Length: 259
Image (cartoon, helix red, strand yellow):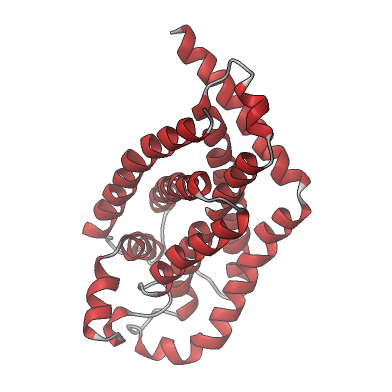
């Protein structure tokens, strides 16, 4: 019990440390505020006129797009965890941590929870910006709660997966390249920005059955006031599987590298 309490204290301290890094880093704050707005406005302006014609009657492209932009922002935002972990591994701070009686998992948990905070800010900013350009959700309070739960799970899952990349990578440049190669195809080869019906056969099969699409379609259905059906369940299962796999692997690799 004492070890558990000590671990919780260590995690709390590391969360505060990682959060302060975000608050004091002007680049991260600007990215949290302006990057999601830029993506939202650009996609809505560039693709809205053509893609809206392929949507069912009564659904505007901005309402269709919002779920995809939110999920994309969260996915790419998880790279912050990987970069922060890689920085800790390469700049000698871990030598100091090893000299302290602290839990190894606390360092990773601090970065992951701080990333959750940053993504929450980005999501709120994006939704507010969406209202300014015509976003009109048709969900209720229960729907928003379901969306929040799913996005929190999705953020935690992707951040823990990103922490693995941060641990195994030898440099920040390698982290940025690896996360881009992994996340970019998953977000764009999905239903985030356009219906899968217009995709080629094999690409459509991949897009319709990969985890990003499940999360996007679940969030989109709730935003539009529709029943998400199996999408919500599948999205939750995908997130839980990622967490169950990523947390122990990340912690084990971290312990191995910091011995």
